[in-house]
Image (cartoon, rainbow, N blue to C red):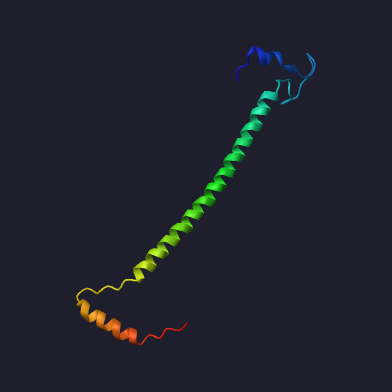
Length: 108
């Protein structure tokens, strides 16, 4: 980390000159206010991004549900059509369908 003149002006020396120090003992401190403010902003931005991600995940789930409904509706529409099987004349197939429909009882 490079120190500029402003940073050096905010340098606070810990302890007395010539005093014995222990390993990892803090010898000096720089003003942390700016860095702490940047850290707080970064944390807030990260939390906002996480909230946005959760909202996007909810929207994606809604898209999945809507697509499933489209698929069901498409299948329902396809089920409303009766097609002649390959290799069998359509007239024969319709005759069988009509005979089968005579046996259908509708109940309300």
